[in-house]
Image 1 (cartoon, rainbow, N blue to C red):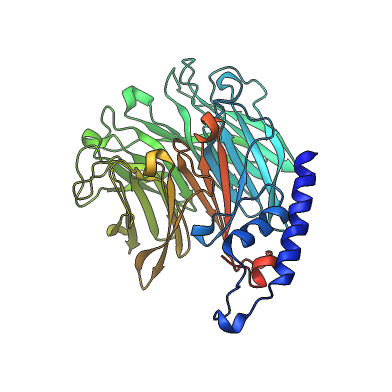
Image 2 (image 1 turned 30 degrees about the horizontal axis):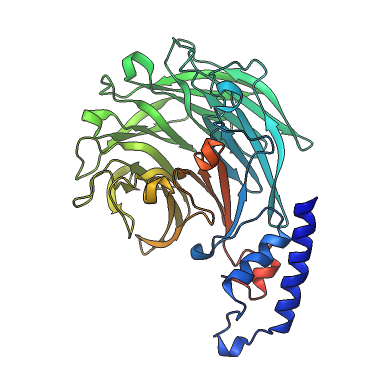
Length: 436
């Protein structure tokens, strides 16, 4: 109650101040003359729990779980589809895990539901990975600490409410396969990574849905499988193309694999490696795919003299053949940034997470492409950045919205940050000249 009263009086103060200081667009080239701190406070007041990351130039809103506790790891996984987001907290309740559903209305994101597994147990790590498309969600939990095989759950939404529909397991799973370490979803096809399978050679499993029931249809492995390659640590899926990371391949130099579907069977099409790859680069720790463009993160890559600064590699497809087209690094990169720990791409926009900068405060970098060349457009940081927050550990994109996880915030209670571009049509304040 005290907080609400304080916000109300702050709002009155801000509006009064704003009205007393009219905007002179002609003298600012069309920009507002309202001070940045005031613009931030106005949006924060009207949008309840929102916090504005002024340096980013995007509209920021920070969210946390309504029942968050120290060690939950809220933000360890994120997924975004339109006005719905999933945020994982895999260590919640002694590692039983949970996933929180957030929905957006009039530019404001709010918690709508908390999802848990019907048979959840300590150290299942439910929520370690998440994927969403429309009214279907896929949630993984590797069960590593309790020696489980790993599991993934399908949830479906009806009438605005999500409910568990099916539990998925590998037909040949054994303890510590870590099935569910990564998940991807596209239409009626799901892809689930199990990077611990067969002494960490790794595998991934394809499930297809028919008449509401999901069934395993294929197991994928690398044609050159080797111990500790960690194939399946990251997966993504779009149409008849799948991209799978194997960050442990060749002394942790790393690799990624393209698989395609001919209508009935998935088969390996190509293995992707960096043209300047080196041991401990961890290429394949993260993967993203959109059409004929793939992003593959290499969080351990050395750049110049900077160990583990990290990089992200862009691969493009022409005539069915994939080739490296660009290597991306951050403009202010430093050693141990871990740039490339997470990647996302939608159309001509991409987002690359780096949880290491500034004593693991973290950052995320927006890239755009023009004429086939990607360039850094913006650096995002949390408005309340703090050491150890690990902002950028996971990222997601959907339309004009972005989502960044910060699982280490507040002693690993965790938080997540939504961003929208200042020109987003549902933000009336910024559309009227209050853009940062």
